[in-house]
Length: 139
Figure 1: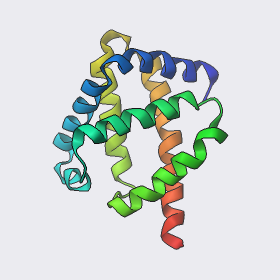
Figure 2: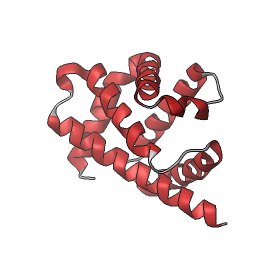
Figure 3: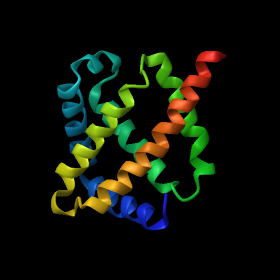
């Protein structure tokens, strides 16, 4: 990711953080509307799941410019997701739900540049998770 993209992701996430509980609720509602079969993958209380999601996004956003710090945690997350029943094709649906949520939450601030920056961030992180997950199937 380019430094200006990282900065855009950080600035826009800072706008979402004060309403992170609402953003997480919107995210999961949209995710399950898009693909109802994904609901069965979430065994936890969805509010708790939402808090965990926002904490992980916060962690990832803070480490985008120093991926060596966040990579082990992102890889571990990808490996854990295998046990939850997450498949590679689910990542695209999740990414689309994330972008939709950001667009709803940011309104006019969700510019093409912001969308591209978040898309790059998600591709990077999802790619690490997918790679880690595929490796965990072999062990």
